[in-house]
Image (cartoon, rainbow, N blue to C red):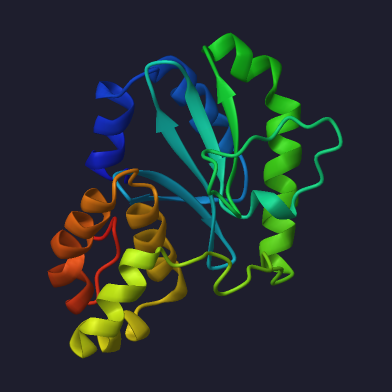
Length: 192
């Protein structure tokens, strides 16, 4: 039985026709559909393979370990400038999805094979610079430093990017102050 949250996602979200076409392709493959992160997630061999997002400008197929996929034609894009592993395919409508169905299947087949083989995206643990304001805050607050060091590398990276993207020094300090309680609780920027 389909999770009612998944049904609602396809009925009430942006680009429902294109997303439904993507879903039909994915459900015809050896994938399990689950509801994660406020949307459908497709899994195989115990790992996340793909997800779907609906935006005003496009329906998007996200491939979690897309950086591992062979893409000689350069069809896969990054969802943002700081994305490391995820790659995406964007579609305007269901006709585009259906025209690209063989390409979609090929990418998803590769992703499933990579998951079955246990392949992982090789990500350096700390490939970011800490903003000076964050270094100062961590040096001045031992409790914050201890909580910071206990965060996962991904959560540290998220907070460092969030603080570092502020243009004004006062904004960086304000972001650190606002984040302090969440960091002490072991939360990342996007954790609830």
